[in-house]
Length: 274
Image 1: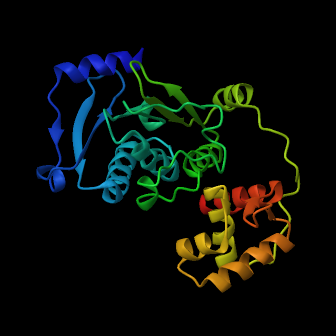
Image 2 (image 1 turned 135 degrees about the vertical axis):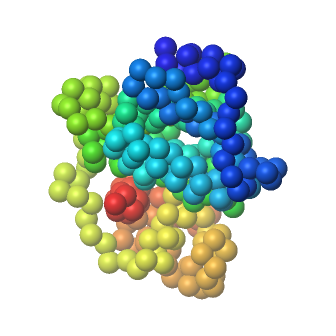
């Protein structure tokens, strides 16, 4: 298998280092570009911290994908790369295959326990520590899948050999790939075939709704803290969301996301994908 070949090659080859942040102690990943019928070009790329890592690694991989003539969307690459924070960036290898039409990101982190739910909007493995570095709304892999599907591709999540996760973004221009994706991951029947009903809520209220989804259940103080607004404003925003049926109040008065609210968040996040 290609992944096994890569592991063997990594043991035999010396990685090239990029300029700039590589002299600093930070986050290191290996990026392997597989040309057709040739020896892979392996580069070690470093970043100082998670914030810079996402931008730097995404830019580097996207450039290599375009140089190879591939069509993997930058949005999908960015979201899968950002998701590496959950693995602590341990043992990361990013492979560019099939003339840039496949990007495979493997790590040696704790793995994904519920791979069947990993790409659901709102399913997040973010810890309190990582929430300070990433968006943390359980949207990353869902955005990656949406971006890939817009160009007839797919995203798959698998266990890595020896522990960790392998996320693969694949795109192609032929119907075979689209048919295989639809057969393996049939799209669930949507509650709103014509699209989620339009809601007259402000951008701030959209952010409040996303915060409810992210946190599971919240009160006004949590929303106020996350959005840096007053508690009274947060209370009014939550009340508006409740009036629209987007959140529900539990016995303690905290708000929970409703099915309609979850669908609206998915619609909002899909709009982020250009």
